[in-house]
Image 1 (cartoon, rainbow, N blue to C red):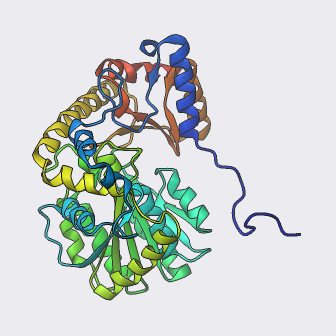
Image 2 (image 1 turned 120 degrees about the horizontal axis):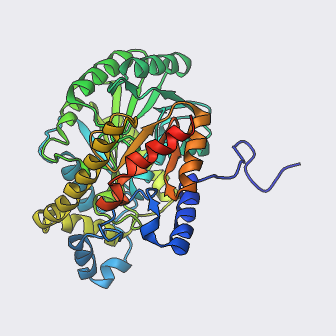
Length: 412
């Protein structure tokens, strides 16, 4: 007998460990006071007083918008034309791209990722992701009735290109097409950023692989505007100009992250290919998906992004840079103390998170639980513990690595 819902899909309930642990942390803070709890769960930028950062240049601009601008529909379900152009301008900035392109407005960077998966892969095909990754990549593949294959992120302190090659080649043989996610720069959750040389080698490989079938790289750049050196943060994109005719790149951009407007869902999918027809083929499907799912992106969110990044660009960058410097200071404290006490973490260069390296699954679970018992709240990920230094004050960062190391040693 038929049921009320789709049958050919995973019916297991969603388990979002992030929000579960966040709730536990908030309960502990309510009982014991925030000064006695380390809440390193939140993937948003907080100031030194423990308050969510809401950049004045962003929200003063938003509040100045006419109410009718906030109330009206967007010009089109694929995004306002000025927004689409400014997303392209902002993503690449001084990097000249000699490729056909288009931009589709999406609800945050998440919308860009999910729309790409749904419109590139057929049901039963396989999405390729890093073995340490944002958990919703896997959830999005499940909703699309797709499988997931993982490549190892690291070979020592470098990107594991050989693992990426091996997994992509295997999937190409099985399905004649590859869709692989690269979360770079400021990888979530490790904070790794690939070098230009690593990108050059990766592009050379996908060009070679594309002789066997289409290759689509999905570059999730959610945290790019919090890279430590913004002047060079986009240099790797120059390598995109080297892609062959059977390679496509989709960039998932998050206005929500860039503007510290996490709840005002706005972003874009930037489609790049050698041929305009290749871009148009995916654009058509994404347009249909947009119209049939979220209908259109908030008009005010798009207008706000355009105004902030054009009319108020210098003031916005100056205000944002203060928090980038603060983020760097927090992370350097944690890393320095971790190095001193021998607390292992995955290669970190920049970004919101540092991930402790715990490869034994049993030890990982016991370590996470032991930290919870001592009011240190973190997020357990595959083979590691994500520490959201973006949300911790400098005071909370100091001594944290040693506390963690002592807890870990007590379990061995």
